[in-house]
Image (cartoon, rainbow, N blue to C red; front, top):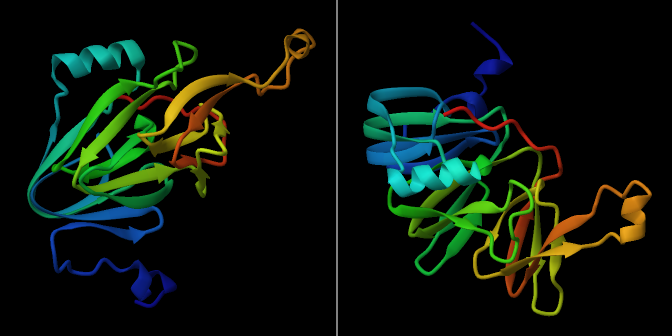
Length: 224
């Protein structure tokens, strides 16, 4: 049988070492030797001796998820084998988090990660209770984290001299040492005239970076 479908770039190669790699721009391959964690329902294929089990978040995590809607619906993948993860053909990116790093990420953008990483659902400081996207998951520890993004992301440096303002529906994540607050960029008079559609943004200050996606559309929440 002959086809461009069988080109080398499409073939899944036998893995040499455990861990996470990009299969392609839309899919992450993970060689499991023990345990890893992934978004529920994100596995698209696997081979080997693997078990997929719902991962509980504990009472505190369940309560935060009920209040914020931000919780990560996770599954634990255990055993030995290879698994492929994807979500709605979104673009995939792998981030290595090193000791001392802290990355805050919107739960909708998390695909899978090493079991050596820790995460906690936290309120975005200074953002009050305006809107539903102001609770993020903060990742720390040492390991690999795979993120998904609807479209090609934009990574914007933040400096002490130049804060960055982002739409809360478009933000993917940022370095957790940045300070955050809500910023109003629309006058009251403009609001009375129907508004610009850009009334309030999240302001990030300090030294670090922020990642945004090229869309302000709010996706439907995942079913857990």
